[in-house]
Image (cartoon, rainbow, N blue to C red; front, side, top):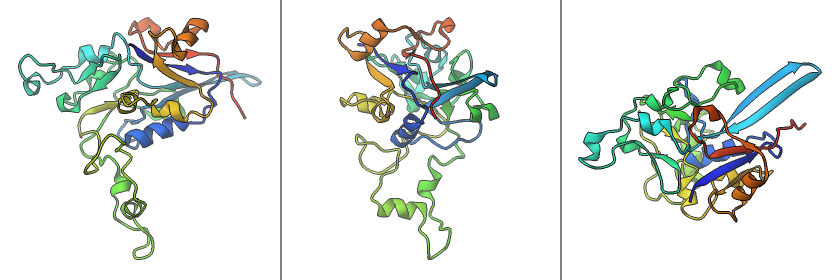
Length: 266
């Protein structure tokens, strides 16, 4: 088995539902300190001079590469892991997904560098706000609360309006960090001073569901499945249509493929 994703740019309408679903499912933080914390993001650019212009939107996420440089560069924590045990914070699952173990992460950020991930940046600048740059890996700063709005107990108008914490409690809502496979006291999934990235919603996939971004896509532009199963939809699409992957020259062998051509919709 080798799980992967196809994004059909001809079907994508650039609505951003995938990004909202990802943030809701995985409780990623708000943008801060040069970190986007967007596991699902967009690369956008325009070219040409009016009226001969072209606008492109390319949804991006961790590529779960077959040859992931992030794993190679990760120093891990051999001492904490124990003698003879796997010590890398980043690792591959049998299904081909690249996951991160926060318990072994030392927060060095090496995986964010160009040697660690060609799809990431240590610090994002203003260009990331317009979709010119992005980073599939983010670092959680120790000084920031994971979800300050959910923990906020202050009211805009004391005695009149409810705080964010009160609204969440009365609505019976769980913190977005939680999913159906995590019970008990609600805590943030990720610890401070460690990196975070897309997991292909491993907690959903291993329970027979699709990644959240795939499930919510209104135009069914995302196809997820086993690339090695000749009967799977993703396998058939890759066999039938011409596809490309981002920065293939880096030879990381990404498992996120793109087909079709993006067409702006009104």
